[in-house]
Structures are given as structure tokens and as C-alpha cells.
Image (cartoon, rainbow, N blue to C red; front, side):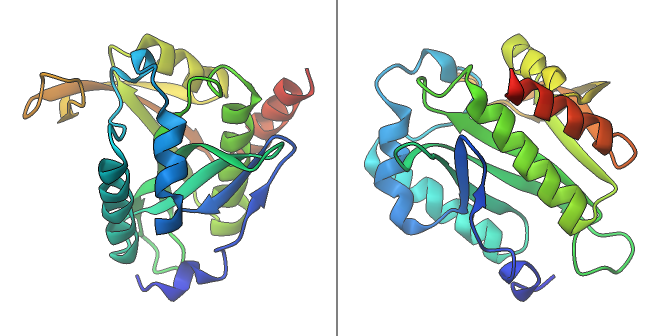
Length: 208
């Protein structure tokens, strides 16, 4: 893969509640501010603790993007254009020689406490899934979370992804104090045949 294969998609994805832009170095202060002082909801998720860590977090994401491993985004609340979180495509896989990946995973997602349990996550997933299925033409989108993270598992199931099982000791843990240890991962997926139904489901959730 080369960088130009995603260049024409480096634009803002706009919904009623969010605007999703490709992550940039200019987002460091906004991303750090989004973390806030209440870190209770980040037990399973790595988030920056300082502005310097926010810059390093973005540097790492952009290095991975330049290497073709991820496509990283900032998530902004449309009402005030404030950054409320971040998300990305990762584990990009090519099987059929196309310019765009055949399978992607949505992950690396976290939101500010104020944005959690709002329409922001639902619409973010809708816009990313639409990009993946309608423009990239993927056959499948994966989602995974720490198997202990019941809140995240419920949120993933709520958007219409199918639970596919637990991969035991499959990925590194992000829980504080578990550095260097593996975790069990709960795996979910949406395949191309599911997408029209999932899209309607997400639209209905947003219309409530």
C-alpha cells in the first residue's frame, strides 16, 4: 500500500452530531482536553495523561498511518467543533490486489466523558461503516474489546455487530498494572451482507 491510496478520502465526514477528520499534529491540545479530569471510564483504554503524551499518541498514530497500518481520525462535536475523542481503522488487510483494503477493524476509540452515552458514538460508527463499505468496498468490518469490558461489549452489540466469540490471551492488555500481559478479546463483526440492515438500524437509533 502507498499513501496516495487514501489521499482522496482525506476529507471531513460530516453528520448531524459529529465531524470526523483525519488526525493531525494540530489536534494534540484538543485531544488532551477531551480526556478531562474524570478518568473512571478509561480503565481498559489507553488515553494521554499529559499534553506531551497527547503529542506522542498522535505521533505514533500518524507514523502507523504513514506505514499503511491505520487510518486515524479525530472526532469533533459539530455544535462547537470541539474534539471529543478519536477513532481509527486498523488491522487493514488486502487479499484481492485492490487499492483499498478488503477487511478493516474499527478500534482505538475513546471519547470524552461528556460525549459518552450520547449520539456521538452511534453517528461516528455510522459514518465510518459507510466509508468502509460504500467507498472502500470492504467485505467485513471487525470490532474487538477486552472481554471484561462489558460496557464496550454492549455498545458494540447495540450498533448491530454480531458477537463472534472470545479469543483467549490474544492481545496485549491496556489495563493499568497489566503491562506486558495478554488479555482475552471479545470479537464482533459486520459483513457486507449485513451492512444495509445495520445502516438502517443506526439511522433509526439516531432518529430517536
